Length: 329
Image (cartoon, rainbow, N blue to C red; front, side, top):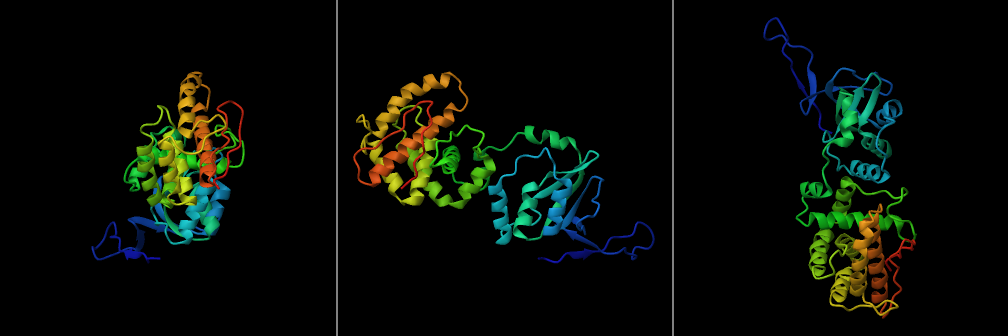
């Protein structure tokens, strides 16, 4: 940890060579020492604070906002891993407290929980006494889309394809082996930060999958779920390198295993593409998500048959009846 450099502060009056007690600064902010149980500043001010595991637990216990967003365990785990591995950049993320007049932690629950989980103490820029109205407008600000954040993190292109593919891959991983619908309340819908963290795990694979998958579906039926195809290709590439893309090339040419009615995967999508617009016009909630789920189920079942050398596979039916998502073999 880099030691703070004492900075002499000139006295308000008196001779020019008279100085006050040196003030420790970090990133231009005055450092203050806070321990568990201490009263925190109520005036509007920004300070540098070293947040230990004990202090993080104390703040969560005393100041946690009951109206906060739901805690996402995956984010806490990701932050904790970065902190444990020395990858977290200190002072890069702010913590914020409001005072209305009850002091609340309005921003930083995931970070503090990660400190508790990792046991690693870190320096943070902490904003005390923030305007309580900031808690009310937090959810209505113009938020960054997954594409915005992917671009900011250095993704070279195909933002929408990668973003949609990650969303479907994460939904698939949550529900594989079950008949849980993606639009149910038991499923966590990935947000923009979830998408970026997932892409950062294997950006090289994504950067190959997205353009390849997009180029292979340009001649497919209108309305084909490209996000489902990108997500499927990523998952199969991780399990069987090069096989997912080879499979896409096969079915793009009308080949591959057939279902019980003799239809290829391309033929199935052509058939359902005629039905989907009618279903979509009913404006039932989650229709798009179920279309993606159906598309991935067809691809996975056909892929499992193809990689096993089988000529046929049993496909799910596009209907309101739930079906189990198969695991990639």
